Image 1 (cartoon, rainbow, N blue to C red):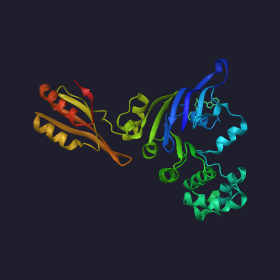
Image 2: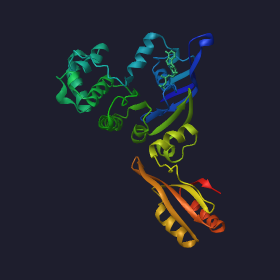
Image 3: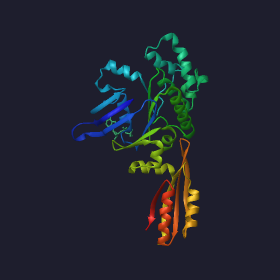
Image 4: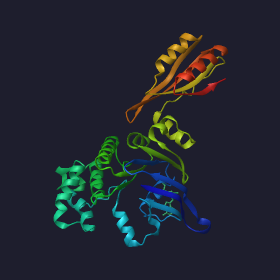
Length: 336
Ligand code: ADP
């Protein structure tokens, strides 16, 4: 388990002082895929680097399985770090070495028994589905394949934690998908804890079990991924989620006197279809669908629909009560 307690990170001094992380509290459970999202400069990278003490916090505690690693000497810290692999946006492979040598490098560096190295390298390349590339050089690999080698290298010494800093940000959609699937598979197979930071909400949606939203150095919201997408609370969470769901209201749309613009969301447990037809049948109103989208978060459907409700006020009111009761969430976007 990873626990960050009241973490502050300050850079610079005096009037130049800048607080990159402010009073961050976070608990990440063993075996989960935990993600941190937020705009560039939010402090995500700094916070993740605190987990393996690449960045010393100005204040606060970092507990790994209950042990405060901010108090350790270099030797002790080295041992703790062996338990954490890390991958980055850029793959940092050694261009003059083969793929097998790149992976073996971190085994040599950490005094892995020499005679067991070839076997471990093979195991790792199998794990990332690249056995046939053992003798190839990095230049001959796609971005996704390079990142897979970086993953193999990061996992060489059987760490229990994998830290990923924008690990898909340099990749195209296809390669991103490939890395997301691979990380999920490795997480399930090995129960490794994954901490993943990204500004890409599509990746968050597909990969994370839980998510933290960060902005201006602060953790604003933490929730499971489905709740984050269906019920974002803080403005930063709302705006990032909204961008993925991409259900917009046409700018030219005007809401008249006898109209109301609604945003309805529904989950796998209900469906908007009967709600709309029943509302139109039971009350003297009409409902037009302006836009809508169904999305899947970990195979569970979630839909958003923008509708225009028309009718006299008294009928509209009754219809609204009915609709609100029968959808997951109803929000008024415009009208009286
Ligand atoms: P993110 O990962 O969310 O993009 P970072 O953690 O990289 O954000 O950076 C947060 C803020 O801290 C940024 O304003 C950045 O310029 C600043 N920062 C990061 N590292 C340093 C450093 N070593 N010295 C001074 N400022 C830094």
